[in-house]
Length: 160
Image (cartoon, rainbow, N blue to C red; front, side, top):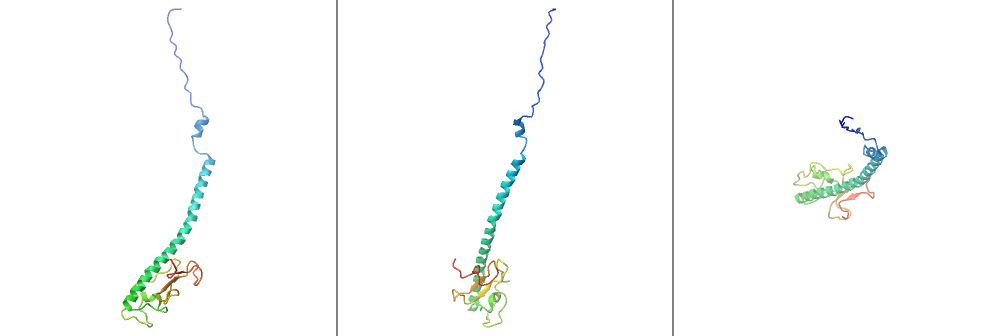
């Protein structure tokens, strides 16, 4: 041999990672996982919608109470200006239009632009004297069923 030395370099072929179970797990979601997540979202939305139905009902009750207070304040203003409340026959229209039936107020002025409807789009019923307190007027909402003298009626003279 001649004395020359060959340098041998070994090159290792580059290995591409084979698709193993580890890399497949992180590639994306499985169909089962997607179905479970969508099911959970649907249950949460269903519960939220069901809960909001009770909130809507109680907000209408709150609006009716607020209307009772507003109308009662306007009726008090009417009484202060005229010395008496409107009669049942004159009704809440007396706050908007000058009554033409007795007693006709001497110093009438419009107190409201229009009489509001109750939260269920019915007209409020007005009574003077009221059933529970005959010294005060009573304002009544027919409630959700829209029928007078049923259990769901609301009155300004109800116990709070």
